[in-house]
Structures are given as structure tokens and as C-alpha cells.
Image (cartoon, chains in turn blue, red, brown, yellow):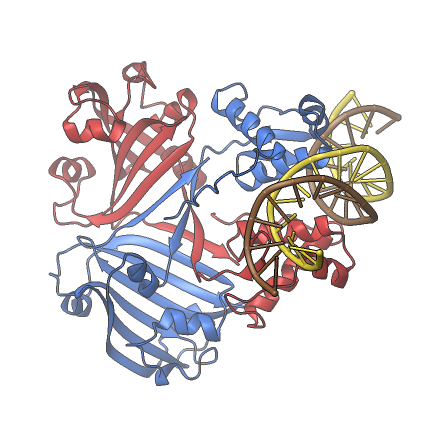
Length: 243
Length: 243
DNA sequence: TAGTGGTCTAGACCACAAA
DNA sequence: TTGTGGTCTAGACCACTAG
């Protein structure tokens, strides 16, 4: 899901891919180890009989992928960090369930305007007591509760939040429309559900849950803070990556 | 940590970034919504007085970032998926702890050659009963157990696995040297620890844990399968993303 | 000064899709 | 046939680093 499908190579393999693969293979085989100096663009161009721009593209993409590091005036080096870097995609829950061909249902538990506590206000860069919108929605996949969505919304970014019909449109979808996403921060942890969450999800207080917390910004302004609680027995994140 | 530091722009902003930012702003402001056709490379080149190659680079990078989708012979479109796509970096636990400026210690619990069960064999594409190496190591951060690493290794990829000193070098680090990483798949879930895991981590059987399972490939061959169990109260994954 | 990477150009040929 | 994106070239100028 997280890995892109390789496009079917109808034509011949592009030249810049030959360079990329050559360097990747060399790194994979241990011919170059982390910290090693790689051939310069000019040398690779001569070796493969390619223009510098074509070689440059190969090296640039390897840099973006975290495989090598380049220093102007010095050279290209095999990256130090052996990191397993993968794209974790957190999608709108409706799309996620629909993509599995399943039925999605959302049940609104509460929706109200509240006064921010000091902690909540700090998250949004507001003053304590400032108004916030608060919603709690439970999402079902084929009738089974898989996510409890506890959300705070900055009224300045979505003044009509309280008037939405969240049985029809998820908050994520609505908010993305009114306040385009520019930045997000998240954490993922395992913890026990709060009493309300356990009740809404129909699980026991001692059942472990996967909790995703996400703070989302639009043009530098905090739009929404959400806590997504998933029963550990019914939900997992998955992903993958290819070098 | 997951986001790259912006390099200090000593010189003027590159032209291709002007195009990228123009399109990003237009998408963020709602001028173009998902599915919309964007201006062609030729049109953008004329508007910004740039060559097609420069515009092409801007559009190519936006494609890599998942912001737009391009179809040969048709055009460029604003991507449909409002996905919060972020780089989740799973680093070697030693580097991770060292990066926090803390002390890392590894304690080997067991290390042996075993015969693969049918399920284990299937993961590695081997026959049931084939030999596998198995290790269980507990990792401590400043003396606190934060990860139980239960690992299976394909002997064909790392024949000397049993001879390593895992108090000095983590399996991840060793394996990356002998069998360079080419592909990985992982899942993240919340669950209760196995009895042994609870004992080794010094937690109760009912304490929720964040479990990362990862299957790693080198040149198409499954090298190692690992289950990383973290006490939910002592560990969380974090990340972020910028559009 | 010599070598490196960072960027940009003004062309080119191709594969592909729609009219 | 026209317009799109995908790739590639042979130069160019610049910023930076090292000797």
C-alpha cells in the first residue's frame, strides 16, 4: 500500500536508472561502504557515456532517497545512516475502509464548543479559555468499531465545523477542504483506552490500543488536533519500502 | 528528526523552486483542487520564462512528493489522495539511543540454531525444518528496558551470525553490513507482551506494548524477520511531514 | 587553481493519448 | 495531427572546497 507500484517499463530502461542501479548495487555489494567517496559526475558520465545532467539526475534522486550525501566542492559519499526509511501513509479513515472494499459508518457521539484548557490552548497557540470545537466520532468497518476519533478544531480555521453532518463526511475530509494541509506532526503509541473510548469501541479497559495523535497545520496555523484510538486486536499499521 | 533540515539558502532561490512553490501555494489555497488539470510544462515555462527542463524538474519533484500526478500524453493533475504521507524512520536502536545522548546497553538472552516451523519457513521462502538462527536480545536506554528484539535470521545470508558479540554490535548493524538492505515490510500494532517478553522487559503481562514486525530483504532474499516489542509506557514513534 | 556539485538552457527525439 | 509528458544532450555559469 505504501510502496508505489513499479510502472511497467514499456520502453527501454532510462539511462539515468542504469547509473542509479550501478551505484545502488555497488553500495549493496559492499564495494562502497558508508563514508566512501563515490565517482564524480564527470567520471560517471565518461564511464556510461552520458551527459553530466543525466548523471546528475541519478545522483540527485539517490540523495533524495537518503542513499548518498553530496557536498558541493567536495564530492558524493555513501550515506552514514543505515536507516530504514519508509513512507507511512495515514489516510482518511473513510478512504481507507473503502479501499478495502468494506462498508464505512460513522457515529457521532458528541459535538460542541468548549473552552480550551491551558494544555489544549498551548497546542494551538491560543490563550487558555479560548473557544475550540470538540467532536468525538466512532468509525465502524462492516459494523465493527475500529477507531474512536477525539478531535479538537481551531474555530478560526473552520468556523462552520459544528454545522457539518459527520455521518456523511469525515472531519478529516471536511477539514482538508476548508484548510489545506501544509504540515503535520504525529506520534504513535500503545496504551490503554480511556473509559469513554473503551465504552464507545466496545472493548475492555485492559485491551491495548494503538493510538495515533496528530497535530495538523495549514499555512503555519494549527488547525486540528486529533487522537485516534484503535483496538489493538482490530487494527494495525503496515508499510514497506524499497531501496 | 524525520524531516530534513532546510539547507541555508546562501544564494538566490533556484528557479525550479519558484515553480514548485507557485503550484504548492495554488493547491494549498484551493485555486486547484484534487483532480484539476494543471498548466502544462510549456505553459509554465512561458509564464516563468524558464526552459522546459527546469519546469520539468519542479513537476517531477512534486510527483515524487505525492502532490501531483502526471499522465503522459494527457497532463498534470492535482493528486486525489489527501494523504498524510510521512517518512517513518526506524533506525538501529543503538543509533537511536545514542542520538538522544543516552547510554545504550544490550543483553543477550538467547542465541541458537533452530529448525523452522512451517510458518517461519514460509516467511523466508524455505522448507519447514530448514535451519534458522534465532536470537532474543533486550535493549536498555540508561538502564531501562525499552525493546525486546526477537529475531530470526536466514543462515544463507549471514552464516557467521551465531559468532557475533551482540553486546558490542546490534544485529541490525551487523546484518546491514553482511546483507545490504534492499527492501523491507513492516507492521505496527498494539498488543500484550508474550510471557517471556514481559519478563525480560520487567513489565506486567497486561501492560500494552507497541510491536513492530519487520521482514527485511537483500536482493530479493529474505534476510531476517524481527519482532520488536516496546513497553507502551516507555516508547513511542514520532514523525512529521511538510507539504 | 583545479575539481566538485547546483543550476539552467535551447534544442532534440520519443511514447502516448485525445481529437 | 496536435499536444502532452519522459528522457537526453552539450554546452554554460556559478558557489564551494581543497591544495
